[in-house]
Image (cartoon, rainbow, N blue to C red):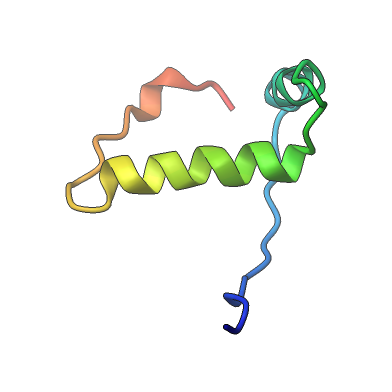
Length: 63
């Protein structure tokens, strides 16, 4: 069976979000990579929203 193809992209995070992700990844046993944590989170997000409109709150962030 052939491996599923993957696409690569870049994300720019503010320092607070990067630090929070890094702490989550590093605190796992064994520690996980940031790439794995983000991929895992995106898989959950896609599963939760794939069949409905996303309600975004653009006022929640002061980026």
